[in-house]
Length: 315
Picture 1 (cartoon, rainbow, N blue to C red):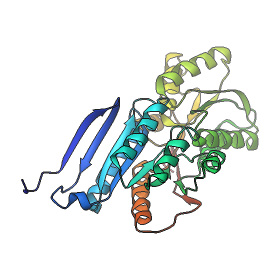
Picture 2 (picture 1 turned 90 degrees about the horizontal axis):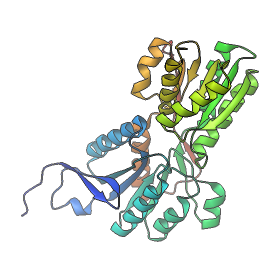
Picture 3 (picture 1 turned 60 degrees about the vertical axis):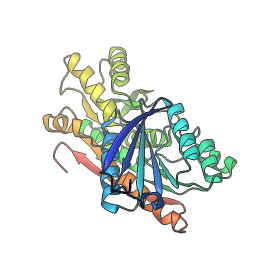
Picture 4 (picture 1 turned 180 degrees about the horizontal axis):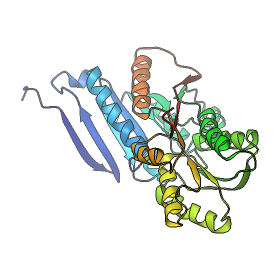
């Protein structure tokens, strides 16, 4: 039949993936539109839910592409991301926009995508430079300055506590560049603010793991005064642990991402700062750059995207 189909969104189960296929104004000409695969991290994280929603909206507004967004089930499910890339290679998509869960593990499959003639745009988390060099891959990075953002958030904590303040850091996935950069940014704030760093451990970006990790930290160090969480999902777990310990408001918490769930925590003073990196726009930017690359534009280096400090005072 040649009649136009309604705009649709179908969720398919492919190789254990939650794969959303989104078509906009699909008709007989749709096959001529470039197909872009968006590979995100855990859709259990509000940041990536927001990213997906922004990408879908942007694709609808553009109207000149077909978007296939894919999300992981958990932040440590790196194999799902690799499988998603391999699936997109098989489907012969025109471009892949990817926020890698691991900065090294995703390089080989993405190199295979490039060899297959697929445009690859790296967003959010930078791929490892050494791994890219080894694979013969030269890719631009479209994303924020994670180290600078984490320092801004950490500086608020340092100013609040003053020199000698006792703090801990809850880190993200050790294999992800943004986790490493945010740890460095927090370390910068600790050093510049003359804080005392009692402990630093990973919770792999996950809320419940952060709750457990921080509870253990609090048992080992009952004098903790502040927490630097590398993302807001982990900050939620930290705040939950603080409340359970009967120390609500006594331990200051800063995060990163500015997800909707932390807005009441900022208002109530259970968190004092976070950093907005505009996730809904990041994937949209990646899609725009993918379309430019498909038209022959050469992308190089670091294409910085904005960050903004958000505090309990609304700054």
